[in-house]
Length: 446
Image (cartoon, rainbow, N blue to C red; front, top):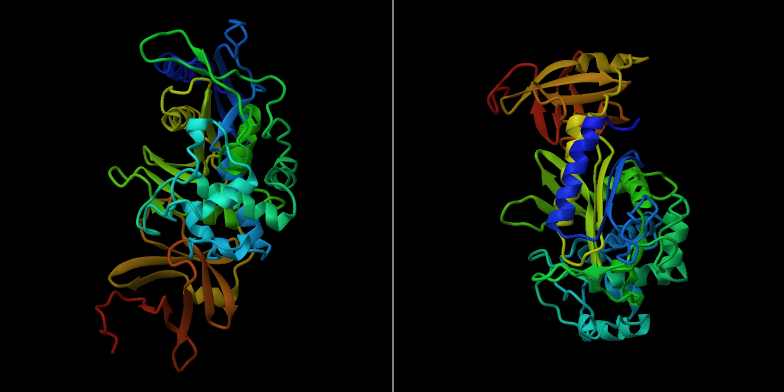
């Protein structure tokens, strides 16, 4: 269902602010829910030779570093297939390297310490390396920082990840991305070659208002880091996948793993972090997952708030407009606040396992009050009074009186139910800590 007129006006105002502040010849802005655009606005023109030709949902822009999110998903799919490990080193897949110990996990999270760009001053010559030149230059590149010391963005690192994908799949990076991601998600207007209706790229100089046309050139071996071109409609679908992935492309558990912070990219304000190939942005108490992209004549941002499956996106054909992450996230926030997603209705359970009944109710550990309950047949635990949006811990049975925490607090840890001489539940140990029906000091039960 489309947004109300009032919400559309608020979103249009924010998009117009981005277009005027950024002096963007042709701006495309949208907000999607579950992969479908609910609001879209094209402002200006995609080609100054046709002033009235505004961007539409099918207008192609260079989405640049948003390509990294596709590369990351393909790497994680290969991991799930058992064909690589996140702690594998580059040389295990690409042969000799003077940079021993650079790991796939480090490249995904920009914590390898490798230099930002490939050797050769590529943004001076405006000629990107071939695959052969990329690999030949890898050992000549500089490791400018210690691994895991801090976040340092590296296009070079993601180009190497793309080469690993190509080697393992036996083709090109784009062929892998198309087979693994684009075709299953029906992203028919996404690829590395400009096609169909597309926005011409411009640079608007700081002391004049006459745009200069930017050159069109291929990223070549840098495609995995920034070579894709796409449309608002296709990137809305991509945002829907980030919110709710399909097994055919990637396991939902693996996508959740990719969203776990690996490093703080903004150590001053703590509002931007990096997961495994995904940028994580905190804004007004919500977390947004996505990426920005910058290419001569095209700046983009696509971010998704996963719990509401809301995606904010912006595409601008100016090399130096407003910051894209802020604009995309703010539009998404307007939509969430003005058009909240309806909660799922409560549904009654169908079974209450008899052996779980003695565990239900109030428990105490370390002076903290916990509540155990059964929801849809599964044992769950939460701190009494915790905010309802904070998920409980959920357990799966591993055997008699033994459970494993599969989500929430203490995920991965074991719960062991203890019984007295009458075989009645006396207490339980969770992550080794004792939980008792009575609030007690440490060792008071001894």
